[in-house]
Amino acid sequence: MKKIPFVDLRAQYLTIKGSVDAAIAEVLHETSFIGGKHVKEFEKNFAELYGVNHCISCANGTDAIYIVLKMLGVGPGDEVITTACSWISTSETISQAGAKPVFVDIEPDYFTIDPARIEEKITKKTKAIIPVHLYGQMAQMDIICDIADRHGLHVIEDCAQSHFSELNLRRAGTYGIASTFSFYPGKNLGAYGDAGCILTNDEQLALNCRMYANHGALVKHQHQMEGINSRLDGLQAAILNAKLSYILEWTEKRNMVSGWYLKSLKGVKQVALPVIRPNAMHSFHLFVIRAERREELIKYLSENGVETAIHYPVPLPFMEAYNYLCHTLEDFPVSRDYQSSILSLPIYPEISEEQVTYVCGLIKLFYS
Image (cartoon, rainbow, N blue to C red; front, side, top):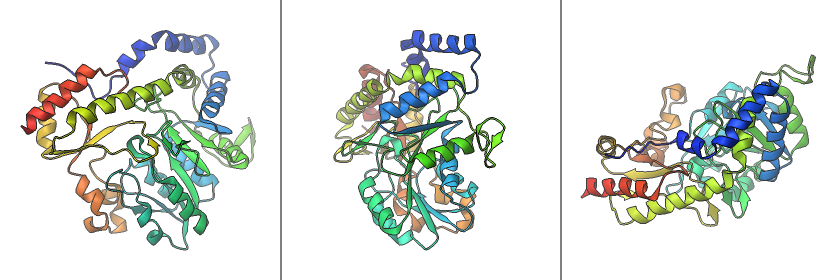
């Protein structure tokens, strides 16, 4: 029986072992564990590859959202609109800033926030919109930014799952006033621990975010505000630098793998396959299907050596943490209907066509 993990980080490490080991050894030799040249080099390299003016590294992707919200002045009495389907980092940071998260249902085909439902949620208290480019698929940023402009709202892009995704030849993270990234180990560009960053072309916002993430100081002991401690360490920066030269190639490979899945599972009527938005380049952080008899399928795949996952089993508005908002299942019909069928299949640049064929063969056999 084959064993196919959901993600195989060891396989990735083995393909770039020389580069990563050398990067780690250099940090250990220099003892540049906090700050230092590796952090500065990663910020410079990521910003240049992405085509933006400023990259502000921080401890993780959750902090990145929180820092941007705080530096944009979001606080008590404000509301921030975001998607009903995401990891809780997107919404919990809104609450941590003192504001109220306002959820919007997703588009049926693309899993991203539905622009047609945004304006009905805008009030005098609304301060910002946080679209999430979920699974690697970009939200309809042209429409969302137009809505935000008309209502005088900030747009903060949550790009934790969409490194180098594109819409209309424009990369995820380059539409709003700022964008936030996670480099959690399993991400398309992942560190070997927690890590994150903020991208922006706004010089003053960049300065404020950098200051806030470093105890409110740009120079040690010169604290211009009260901030937090959210710094990217030298080891993670060096590892990310080593990986950065591979990320565009890895993105191409993810699209190749998704093509194998799409071709092989086409025609399996019990499975709804992911749809790529027109004029978009999906980065396929996850390959998410909607499957009938999902729990039985998960068990069958597991018994045959295939690891799967669910992203995410409970939409944000239905979590206990948000009971105080008094939402009902009818408030978010698409998210409600999808929560019992979505299933993430193994996808990573190192997975082989033979392995994908094996997974697809099991799915076909299960439904036959």
